[in-house]
Image (tube, rainbow, N blue to C red; front, top):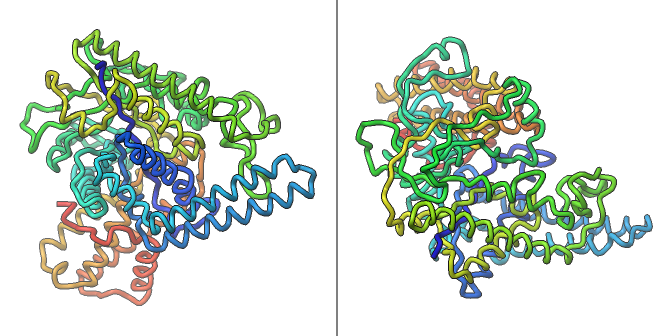
Length: 579
């Protein structure tokens, strides 16, 4: 046995439910369910039905779970599928009128795809995708991990209390939806910071002048009983970071080159003694940790590049469905990649039946790469290793339409392989028999440049001018109210502070900076950020007035109700998360 392998899929979308539909809003969520989550569920269930016992680690961001479990999403997704089916039918007629009959079979393909997705969602899973994943977790197929409750970027949050709230909230929501406490966590954006005297690199000048000792992220995880997390391989071993989202981040890379003086990536000093196919335990302080020392699984750049790299990644194969070119009538995709280097006008017609051989070829190549890496580790270390391959779940199905079938083909091959054991992070941790090596990690992420550039560059730095004062004001207000009995005695005041807590968590989401930095839905992200900022500011004003026995006005009451309608995740929100 050379060693073990696991996919780690990061399943996250920002809070878009009740905040628009198209082009930015709930369609993002519906698209992910139709093209990613349902196909992946089908792949895992097919393998189980065939007696092949698939194993995979997946984290589910709590904000994503809350959207998927919202009763309103059932009609949202059903309507989305109906719209896609209608669009395909219209395309079918349009192709006949415009002498493009060769595209009509693809219109039927899309009609059937969304018909099947709707049927699977409503009939097979009764509208409960989260319940379907929970069933796989209960069966031992899925190692379900958690994440920061709203995907706040841990290394940049103002205080350890703010980071704790992200972790505690994430654990609480995971227990709500999966019925068990998570053993592992996906650090949002794989962002890690060790213990040291920290000052914010962005934000108002008075905040950047601070110099406060902050706990290492692993210490905060240990306090809450989290056993493992995931980082980019450059933090574990050193070297150059392969940025996540590489095929879609050209504008971000150009901004990085411009603002960082053309220094593409300085990288971290390589430690040849460390292997990315090993498990390490992380500690950045001489102090005793509150719980066990968390372990870390490392992102391997070679396997990541096979999937992500724009020039050599599998999704760039000519026969696969092209992500970018969409029909002007319907937005449906009828063309294949053809070549990553041809213009949209030169894309050829997509032929679904032509993708199977390419998927087999790519799956074989990936398994061969994993085998080579594990053999390399075994020769270096003298014991079996585990190679972890972390990716965004949305890569498999959305950005790479054939991706879920690739996952299945790789796992089927590994189940038949006598040298590689298909596993998950939790089981790998339980089975680990090699020496428990404790290491310190540098600060960083899996973003462009390996540091915090995605969330601090010139296009988004202004956001921290709002976040830091509001994080501090929320904590000050909460502590002041706890010093009295007002929160316990007034349901209205409690409701105000609970909604303020929701707005703070949503304001902290790393997605607003990421989408702007990658030049995605820029205006939508700015509007969302400003709306959460305004809600939070007004709610804290209301709390101050209420505490001063001034009560709340009719206008304040109306604003509170508006916030409760728009931003309503986390019914069980607990202000004790900020203790």
